[in-house]
Image (tube, rainbow over all chains, first blue to last red; front, top):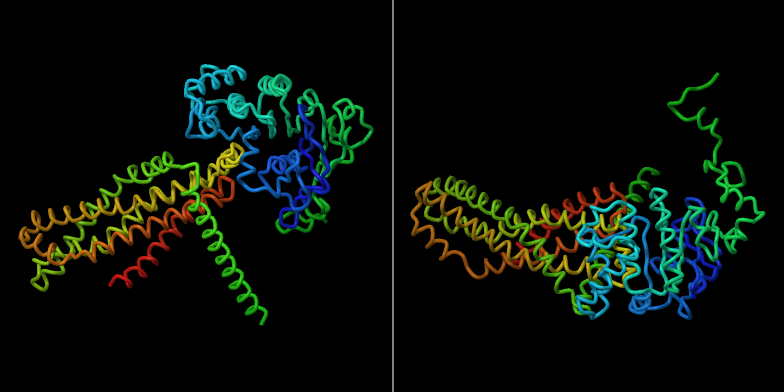
Length: 268
Length: 259
């Protein structure tokens, strides 16, 4: 459904992604995993067309996302949904209006029909009856679920999830993960999930892509990733501090920094 | 020599940076305004923004207008009485308010109340990814966020300035006639005789120009704010300062045109 060909993204002098080749298959859940700063969210934004790659091409079916007009991109987005890391609910609208937003914008449906659709979507995420609440009155988990209901309102063919479980308690994270897995299967959707939650990611993934320092270091089914011999993959899925992926990003010697920086105690 | 080079280098970089931002402002505003005639029509959002910018600024405009008129009447009386020309108080108050103080103070008040809020609101929408969310929901953020605010500020400021002028002149009348005992007839007659259509036109054209400036600068700085809490705070302050200076500069240009 979506194909990335030799994608690269550079911010100033820093390379965020390089040589990314991947394929997002239809009706599957593709999970992009990696540590903080590995380029997961940047990749998701490129795939969703929110940013342009510095090099390479992203094909949505047969259309190059970086070459199409804004109008065409908006047409394509009517069959896309996205759940943002911090939910990104529109602050000035209540839950009902947030979920109904795309229906009001892109359809001529009667308000009664829209109300029925909103009720169905909110029931799906377990929040029926909360229509009147404002985003500021919702907990993090509830806001994520409203964002999911909003993303599903137009029955999209593909939904992007940016860190759907980050900042949530284990129960809310479990609910969101189950919802993503269930809705993808029930609605025959395609899901692209960016997460560093290994347990949640591997539990719903049909296909896993593991990033490190802006490059793909492993790709395959959840089982293949679990059984990988690659030390970097093992370190990541086991959450081990020791291994080829360093915890500290400092380029200089710690002792040298302590000894030569003004204001620190000089050892004799 | 090195220091001189460094100084001119810094000057050049600052100038180029400023030029770049001016160009970016023009491109963003022009591409947003172009969406005024493109479907889907944003009429409902335009009305909402006119309410937010206009109606919500009414109280501050009324208060500023009243005090400006009262102070102007006191100061005008003090100056004119030295020449024995108290009867000219009506025309002095009206001309000063209509030609200058109404548009400028009205615009500065609107910048402080509505302009800062426009920048902060758009900046926060960026921080919380609401702008990206609109993009993903196939709603053009420029059409939904920027264009209605520019148009609203441009349309609303002349109306607010008209109210400012009326209240200012009425307050000036009350102080001049009731407090300082200037003859009521001469106050009104001098005002009618000296204030021309040209003066009124100068006032409202200034108001339209200032409103447009407020809309363009405040939306641009908010839209390009660094998406952090500190970035939004800095952008809000910057929007008020830049807009105020731009209003005063444009005021000088327009005043010299309408002399």
